Length: 143
Image (cartoon, rainbow, N blue to C red; front, side, top):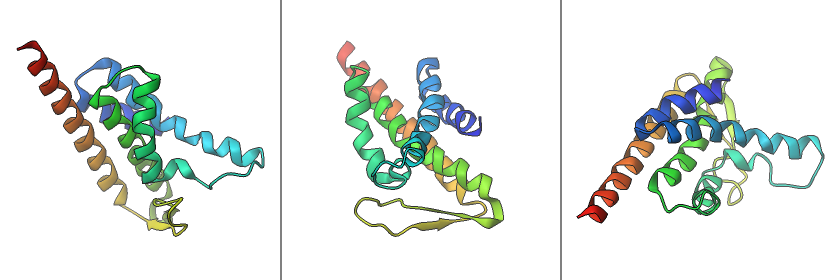
């Protein structure tokens, strides 16, 4: 539930109920990488927790949802940040390691305590920026 709540909070920066809902759903979908793990399939470990995955997801989400909308791209990137943010919050003082640059680097980044705030704030800024550009594009099209 925490991933969804964090996503909904970040989605508010989109100023649209539709994108608030999408922002709430995308971060929980990243846990699908655990299904691959449970099935013992060969795969890159924890790819859904990677910045590379975030970048790859942008055109995929825009293609599958049939729109060229900056907010979709922003929410795709934010979903990874939201997911990592909540995982760090849950780990608390114990911290947690994430392969943020996989598949280019197998090294993990150790995050602890209040590092989750940085990821959450970054997600809000990205969604707000995507919303700004989406609104700006719509206003130019109306002129």
